[in-house]
Amino acid sequence: MALSARERSVLNAIARQIISEDPRLARDLSEHGRGAVTAERIPSGRGSWPILLIAVCLAVFAVTLLVSGGSGSSTHPAIR
Image (cartoon, rainbow, N blue to C red; front, side):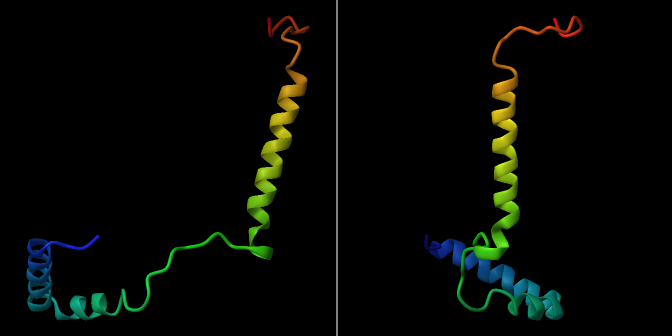
C-alpha cells in the first residue's frame, strides 16, 4: 500500500523535526529498517518441538475429558 503525497509530506516533516531536535535519535532510527522486509516464521525442524509438544498435550487432555465425562451422570454426591 503506497503512501499518499500528503502522508509522505507529513512523514518528511516529522523526520526533519527529529533531525533538528535530536540528531543522535535520528541517526539511531536511521540505522533500523535497512534491508529487505521479511515475515517472521515459525521455526521448523528441531526448533518446533515445543509447539508440537503443547499441541499433543492439548489433544490428550481433550480426549481424556471427552472419555471421562461422556456418561453425563456423576456418582459423587458433591458433584450432583
